[in-house]
Each structure stands twice: as C-alpha cells, then as structure tokens.
Length: 267
Image (cartoon, rainbow, N blue to C red):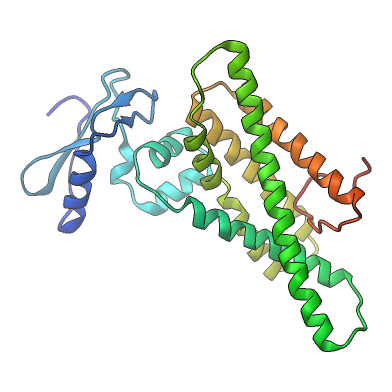
C-alpha cells in the first residue's frame, strides 16, 4: 500500500454505489490543497478500499468518505474548508432547490409570526384568516426577493472583479449551489421561534451571522479565492440586500424580520 493509504470495508450495496461514483469521469478535488484528482479511492476485492493520496500535498484526497455523516455535519457547522470541499466537489448532493425552498418557508414563517404577533385586528374571523394567509405569501415573496438581491450582489462583485483582473470566468452555477447549501443555517429559525424566550432576538442575529459565515466559506472554497475577496463579496451582497429592504420600507411594507442587521435602523 502507498504512503498514507488506508484500507476499509463498506459491506453490501454501499460499496457498489461508492465504486460507481469513483468510476465516474468527473474530476474530484483534494480537500487539503484543492488540486484535482481522478479518483478518491480504489476498490480491491471484496470491498477492501484504499484511499487515494494526493500527488500534490501527499495527503489523503478525501478522508471524509469514510467518516460518519454526523462527524461531517459537525465539521460543516465548524465551517471547515476541507468538509466544504468534500460536500461541494466529492459528493453528489442534489437538494439545492428543495433546501432553498424550505429555508425560505422558514424565514417567511418567522416574519409572518412576528407580523401577526404585533397586529391587533378586530375584523371578522373569515377576513382575519384570509388576511393572515396573504400575509404569509407576501412575506415569502419579500424573503425571496431579499435573498435574490443578496446573491445578485455577490455575483455582480465577482463579475466586476473578473473583468478588472481578466481572469477566468467564475463558475456561477457551482457557486449558486454552494451558496444555497451553505444557507442551511436558516433551518434554525423555526426552533428559535418554537422555544421562544427573552434571548430570541439575539439568537436570530447569531443565526444570521452563522449563515453569512457559511456563505463566506462557500465562496472561498468554490472559487479558491482569498478571504478578503470573499468578505468583499459578502459585503456587496449585504449592501444590495439592505438597499432592497430600504426600498420596501419606503413603500411602507413591513418586512417583519429580526434576522437582519438592518432591523429598526434609520437609513
């Protein structure tokens, strides 16, 4: 066996599925140095596998393929670049659309819940139910527009930066998927509302910070750029998102979100 290689056993169907993934012509990435690799491991007889060693850094191309999903999730919560490369380049996760929709529903519910909590309505019950339903749809539309503005701000900054430096075109499709996946922290909005207490506003702001940190790491890993450019991209997204919220406020729309930094601020 080569230096740094490991042998493991994945019994039954799991080993066959992983072997099929490795035989795919798609290139993988080393989670340590981000260099391309043609395979993650080699499958020997009876499911005995040897993890591939990167030719560039002499470390395992992807140690996470033999890790438990719980360990991978913990490392993702810690925003480790290695686990982001594992998820984005070396796995076939195709839940971006569903995850985005569910996160938007969570955020829309939070805004709708805050709006209903602050409103005093004496209208008949049927009118109240009808108004509450349309309030939820309105909050969902606003949350969608704000997230779209955030992404557009990021993409615009990266596109301008690419034109100024004459570098290769950023992989915007891959980056969009990475941003959608890295926004999974919004799922914590619902537990924060269910177990409401005096520190709920602080929890919502911490969730916002966590989501932005995950987005920052996703940009850095996907495009292999430095931290300063990733931070500037995030700030560009926040500027356009804040401008969108300012427009909604000028229209006298209640955006109803404690999860944004611009809440209760004067523009």
